[in-house]
Amino acid sequence: MQYAIIQNRVLSAEEYTALMTHGEHIADRTPEAGGMSLQLVYGALRPQFGETPMDAMAETRRTCGCWYGTIDGERCVLSTLVDIEFHDPLFRGHAVDVPFSALLHTDLDIGARRNRSIPLFVRYEGLSPAQNLLDRPAILCVCRSERRMRTPLAESGWRNAIDSGRAAESARQCR
Image 1 (cartoon, one colour):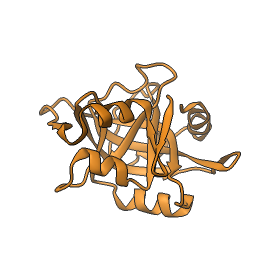
Image 2 (tube, helix red, strand yellow):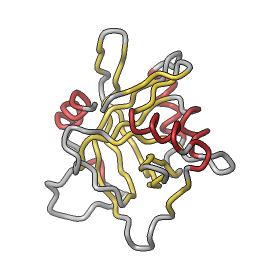
Image 3 (cartoon, helix red, strand yellow):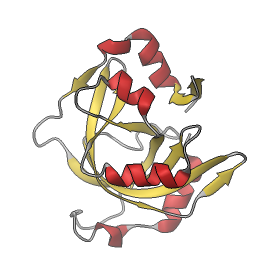
């Protein structure tokens, strides 16, 4: 995934294109009843310029249970961040990526676009998706979904299914 910097804010190329094309007309796509499932996902938390990794992690933990959105053309596709666990940070020059494992309630096909991450942002009520996108303290980049499980995920005990090595590898591959 390619990124652009706007007023010291990092956006994916798709998000930038959607903002420039649709702006405040980006609309929420209401999730279909029964279409969402719990998924164990891996990725990297990328703090925005001026945000510390610790502050970005604290803010992300605080928003567990909230809607998160990702831009798909002129739509904002919604998912729920149920819970998250952070792993040891990866230092990349001046940037820091924080690998994570998360429980996401979603209908997104994560990992379908090989070598492409899905950037998420908190979807606050009363603000447009464009405003939420530009105000996020960090980018939650989801790269991979755990598909090797033999039993369905549950909100209790999901951490037992985490593969820390896979989380770190996924964070390194996030683009």
